[in-house]
Amino acid sequence: MNYIRHRRLLNHYLFLSYLMILTVCSGYLRHITLSGTDVRTILYIIAVYSSYGFIYLLPALLLTKACHRILSRWQDNGGGWVFWVVNCLALTSVSGTILLLLGDRMVYDLYAFHVNGFVWNLVTTPGGISSMGGSSNAFLVIAALVVGMLALQAVVLWLTSAVCRRFLAGEPLRPQKMYLYLLVVFVVFTVGERFTYGISKLQAYGPVLTASNAFPFYQPATFYHLAKKMGYQVEREKAIKVAGYGDLQYPRNPLVVREQGMRPNIVWLVAESWRHDMLDPEIMPATWKFARQAHRFTSNYSGGNGTRMGIFSMFYGLYGPYWFPFLNARQGPVFMDVLQQLNYQISMYTSAKFTYPEFDRTVLVKLPDEVLHECHEGAGWQRDRQNVGDLLAFIRDRDRQQPFFTFMFFESPHARYYFPPESAIRQDYLQELNYATMSLEKDIQRIKNRYINSCSHLDSQFQRIFDVLDKEQLLDTTIVVLVGDHGEEFMEKGRWGHNSEFHEEQVLTPLVVWVPGTGGSVSARMTSHLDIVPTLLPLLGVENPASDYSLGYNLLGSEQRRYTVVGDWSRVAYVDEDYKVVIPFKKAGVVQSRVTTRKDQLEEDQRGFLAAHQNIILTLMKDLSIFKRSAGK
Image 1 (cartoon, helix red, strand yellow):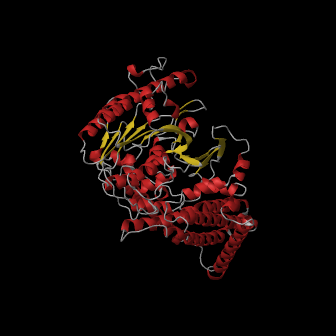
Image 2 (cartoon, rainbow, N blue to C red):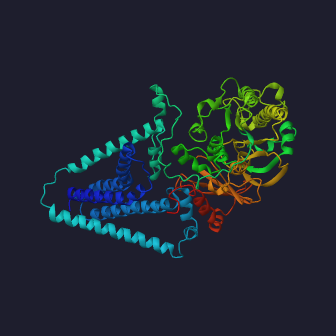
Image 3 (cartoon, rainbow, N blue to C red):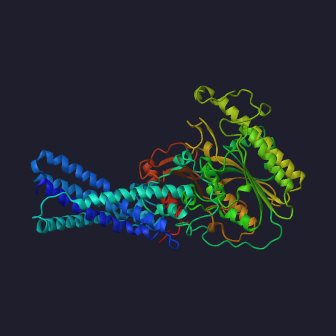
């Protein structure tokens, strides 16, 4: 067979492979929920389904075509051994693509997420596959599937070759315009779905954003910067345009709220980068005094090493990776739903922004603009002072016949660590924190002293709130929560700041909870941001078990957690009493797991540990599927 005829055979075979890939991918479509005649979403799904079917095939296609062209130059006319080498390459690459998609579909059907770092670790860890319920002959089954797929592809290629020889042998070898037309269609569909997703992202159009989750390796496109340059204003959405929130099932059962008298007020105070050892009688005397009367938890883990996952985990009681589907669905936490259902007076304050991270599209999405207050004037400590003044005015001017909820996010302890001179309790601090001129090696202790001084100023602002609550005689009717969004590291283990590692310094925060009539306590047991909402909602009259709406436990109950989970943009850290296992969830094996002790000492036998503890990864996979509709289907 000459080069031209062989090329035509490959074109026909690869087109049939594309149809087979579309057949496999059709299984993803049943996970997409449509409401009525949503034309935009239907057209978007058709475009993504059609174009991504080709994108999945593209590596095999390019590899086969490139090899065919290169090898044919070595042998005139591309016959002989070139025919067999190229055909074998086409068979194996297409088979590998289809098997990968079949495996991904199985994972998505079970856990509602695609092949990622969790799955990679299960496959590469001895005993991992069997831990999912596979038999001891699992690898024999996999081998049989591989051999069977190769055999099937060989039959398809042989039949394609036979048809070409019998029915197309006499045809002139003209360029096959059909495939050129299909390429044009692919380009149109790709541009169309990119544009549709980008516009839907600007408009917060949930059905399209949620539908994109169904397709493996989908790469979203956004037009924020272009829209801003063109004068397009991206407003906070007032209505949620989501059909049943797509793949989310949150809460798992409708909440039942019992009738009761006056419900408690709630004052929820969160400090940026407030790490666990800053709650100290010398650094923060007023907060320390208050904490001694309340419930203080000394081993509390944030849900993340950054603000996004830290705040998300405390309001939803869910692990960090849930952030992505909740952001797409524009679904707020049930905690906020209950407050609004019970007619709480709500007033929210921040010395940063509610739009970055996108809390206006998650935690606060159902709240009206008039209850959201941002202060942008002055340094961080000045903004904190202004916001505290406004928060106290809200408390004084409230309707005393209805309970209130107020929240404030403090900025003082955020780098560059803001404080006025009178708050300095460490005089040897870096006077000007300039990222261009400072030296971490020489200046880190003076930088940390700045941080300590900023926590001292934070204490003075907490004290203002404590004083008013006491003066207004509100402590008998008001729950108070004090917590950091995450910690802050000062090169104790080779990093400065946060958002980089899951070291104890970056993820341990103070947690103080004052609940009227329950007294005070100090607990060293492991707790988490995940546990705050499961503690508060029963006090508001919610009768459901915490498992209906969170992955946390009631801090005032007897049940203790055996492990917790901390997340960032692409990884999670499983933390138990002895070990910490960092696992990528967005990168399929590009970054391997890392095992340390709980105190961040590297475990020598990484693979041995994972082989003996493969249940950790399986547990995380199950936890991350609990609140998704397709879980277990």
